[in-house]
Length: 195
Image 1 (cartoon, rainbow, N blue to C red):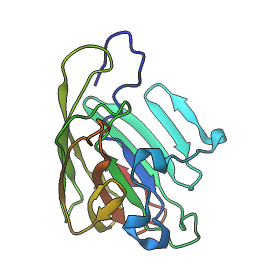
Image 2: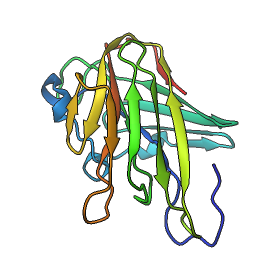
Image 3: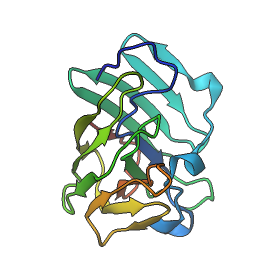
Image 4: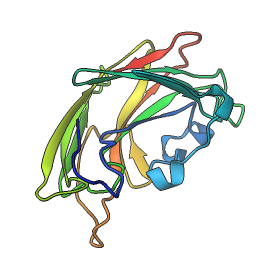
């Protein structure tokens, strides 16, 4: 995707993926889903960047490599054997329906396939500079690990029993956090790939 204009505020960052080595207490409701509360630091010495590639390691021990192709983003997630609490790793990757500038409008939707973990959906966003709005669509597939469970999250709660979500903006205009997650059995030395 591309954005044009003079800028002045962050833009794009649509349908971001975020990895956890595991949720505290092995409970999907204990992970921090809203982007303002899930912020995590990275290990500065692990930053790698070159044309078409970016990589880093989060303080949680998760190593992330990413690149982009025509209409596709490609990710490789490597997870430590234990989460930050010392429990066995049960990696969780979430997909967020918000964007960097919180410009999502009403009725962002996501569906996660209970068997394959494939996430599909769309949302309407505002441009960073300009008029009108646009609808963006996504499809996320995962490979490299066995799926433990998956589902959706809204605000700070998650459920593996629900596979579809349509979420609106809140009454104060800020988009409610929402999206989908897929949780894996620890893949050992294998990476979990996402596109």
